[in-house]
Structure formats: structure tokens, C-alpha cells
Image (cartoon, rainbow, N blue to C red):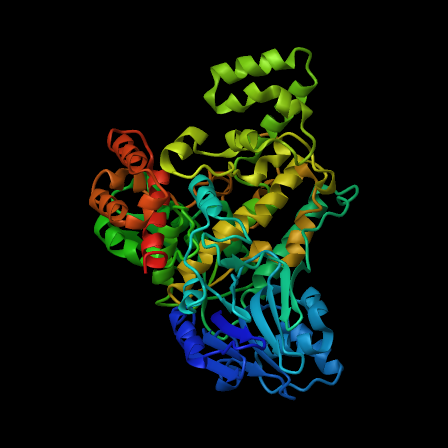
Length: 625
């Protein structure tokens, strides 16, 4: 895992300063503490920071040139099947000088062009420069495990693994995108390709960008599988096939020339990953868990210890006190350059710090909910069925209005005629907002000065209509999660918190072969009755995970933020919000003060306060400089 950056210009008076690109790379030093590289010629410069995982020799350093000198590549990621791809290329006569997956990626692109990406199993963000055609190719992996940002400048573009290096270029504006800001306040993250800055975009997952003298294009090279479901699939056969694919995925992610560990919460997903490792014969397994001092409801250590003991792992724990928590907040926030206000960033930062003392690679359970039907999908599907049934019920308008009056959470049903008449993908934005957002529109108006079109969480587009290409609401929702929530929230903050400590995070549940299979499974193997992730729970039990662990309620890195904001973190929150002078242009101060007062009075507004704190710090670091 690494950090990449670069600048390319075509013609005119545009000049690329290689020292500026060297400075961009040094901003990414936390992503690659093992080495630095720079290559340049007139009109182009590529920078790289190296976290050495495979082939630790200097020969595998980047930027890496093709044997004929035509191509230069900088790359961030891991190609798990690089040995097979290497063998295929050797059969075609390619001769390799390193053992690295970087050289395999470079040769594959030389031989097969963009079609090479279809052959790869892994995670990546790379930039390939063609010196002869003077063309730059940028690409990001299928599901967005690794990030890639870019911005236009006079006569060319700049790109990087994170946003701050781009701001070293004097032509990259720090102007805020008001629509993206509204989306951040409502959703707590911003969907690709937008970012909070008007000048900076993120390349969407599964997309390829080419830029040359003739112009630029961004095109998808992969989409989520939408083929027919598996026919006449017996449950036992499905369990066996899933187990085979899952364990193969976990085994692939052990490829490294450095120590590997598991982030173990004691929940279903991470326990299944650890169990798959043990079933695969992995010895000397290291596991890592985090808890909060004096907060038993946020302490998953008993569950993690039980799984660690069962599997015989070398188990390590970190307990965070309020003081330690407060001391680390500035560092945590400084790594949220593409802000994500998910509470999980806080424990993840600390457990990665602990793991970095012993390993350089961590396997995690991220992605299981999105491909196997987790979260609260049983409740979501009940609501979908209720709305579908209501649409066909005589007198539905009156029934919907009565429900809306009794239940504020169902206020959207007051707009029943709009729901009933809506065509697929055309439900009015305000109704979608009311249906999906944690913040009432009225509160958005109390916080933000500019009235933006209402943002909404696109997940619940499937609430009012089935999406035929995805064969029903569950697959529609999971596909939407995989396109937005997963890359722009979970994988985004997973990348930032792990790379803050030079840790590579690997995600077995997002293996391309496993994802293809899971999207073909019938609903009964994902969500059935009141049970979610049905197939994964059956696998966990078969792998020896106790039923009370496999079926316990998902906590998802619980954090005592609500409690601590009223106590030891109260001053930090107030000072951070008060010191963010940039917010006065976009926010009503009285609206922010009202949220603080409500929380102090006992109404839990911690999640909104965390979002505002993340934004406040981001703006001071990015906008006010």
C-alpha cells in the first residue's frame, strides 16, 4: 500500500514543477514510510511513497518504468492474483526483473491495455503515463477500496491518493461546493465524483480515466453483476460454495512479505475472517481489539477474547481513556481530508495504531453487510412490502395520512399521491429526503444558510419500486450501498485511519469472485424472516464460531461519544466549533449553538455534533489556509 501523486500538462505555457510533485509525495509520507520516488521529464512528474508489502527490494520501487522506457507507473494497492497473471504473461514471452505485483500490473497494461483490469483480483489506484502518446491513464479498483482524487489545472491535471497534496498547486481552488456541503451535513459523507471542493473530484470505483492532448474521458470498466440468480440452488450446496470462495479470498489476502493480522471486534464478520484463516491452516495468527475505559456498553473485548481463545490467536487489546481519546482527536481529524463523520473512525484509528507495532497488514470484516444483506435489512424489506401493499389497497391515501399523523418517522406517507404516481427513479427529492435522512429538512434549514436541493441517501430509491435489473428491492439496496455508502464512507475512512499508521487494510468480503457469487444468491440466503446475513451465519457456525457470537446484535465499533461530549470532551467540541470561523459563511451559528444546548440538556445529538466537529476541523485545515 502506498501513496501516489503527479502532474501532467499538455502544450501552451503550462510548466510542471517536479519539486512541487516531490512536496506532494512528502505530504503522503504516512501512507508510505518505507521509501520515496520521483520521476519527471518536461510536462510530467510522478511521485510515490512506498509501504513495502511484496518484494521489499529496491528493484520494486516506484515510479517504475517499462523495459523499453515507453511507460511509467505509480500504483497504490495489491494484486492478489499477480502470480497467476505473471505466469500468463510469461507464457507470452514477458521476462520479469522483480517479484513485485507492480511490475505485473505494468506488464499486463502493456500487453492487454485497459482489458488487463478484467484479469485482476485485488485493490488498486494507479496512474500510467504513455510517453509516446503523451497520455495519462488513471484507474480505481472495482469497489473503491483505494482512493484517487484529481483536479484540472491550466493545460493539464494533478492527481493524488488524498486531497491535501492537490492543494499545493496554486490553481486548485479551495472553494466549497455548497451542494456537496449540504450532502455532507445530511448524509455525513459525499458521494463520488463530488468532493466538498468545487475543484477536486474523486474517480468513482470501477472507472478508468484517460487524459491526453485531445481531451479526457471517464468511463466504467466494471459494474456490479446483475445476471440471473442461481437456478435450483440447494442451501447446503450454496453454503459449501460460499465457504470455498470466502476461504480462498481470505487466503489470497495473506500474500505478503511482512506480518499479517486480523482486526477482531468479536462480531460475526471479523470472527468469520479469523475462523477462515484458522481453517486455512494459518499459524501465529495475531488479532487486535479496541475498547473504551469505564464504558461497558462499548466494550466488545469479552466476545473478541472468546473468539481469540477458540482460534488460539495471539491476541492484543487497546483500551482508550477519555484523556487519550481527547489527545488523539486532532490527529484523527487531520486524516479526514475527504470528511466522513462515522463514529467508527475513532476506535479504528487506535486499533490500527496498536496493530502497527506488530504487523503491516490487517484483514477486516468490512463489506459483509453490503454483499450479504446485513444492517437492518429485515426491517427495511418489511417497510418496502408495506408500501407496495398499501399502494394496492383501496383507500390507501387515507390510511397513509393516518399513519403519517401517528408516526413522525412515517411523515413521508403524507405525500401519498406523489409516491403512488412516481415512476422508477422519479420520486420527488423532498420525499426521498424525508424518507431516508436522519436530519429533518427544517433542521437543515436552521443549520445551513444556503437552501440547496434536498440531498438524500440513494439506498432507499428501492423503497417505492423494484429495480428490474437487480431483481428486487434487496438486491437494489445492496447494489446502491456498494456504489455509495461502501466506498465513500466505510472504505474511505478505513483507508485513512489505517494509512495514518502505515497499515494496509485488506477486505476479504469484497473479493471479486465472492461478490459475483453473492449477488447471484436468492434472498432467502441473505435475509430471511428476522435474520440477516443468513449464509454467513451458517458458515460461522460450521467453522466453530459459537452461535451466541454469530447471531448477536451488530454493534459496529460502539463509541461513548454522547457521554463524553457532556463530560471530558465538552471543551474540545465547543472550542473546535467556535474556532472554525469559515463556518460563519455557510452556517447559522444559532443553529449550531442550539444543537450543543440540546445535547447538554440530555437529548442525544452526538452524531450531528460529530459531523459538525469533523466539518469544522476540515474547514480550518483545508479552506482557511
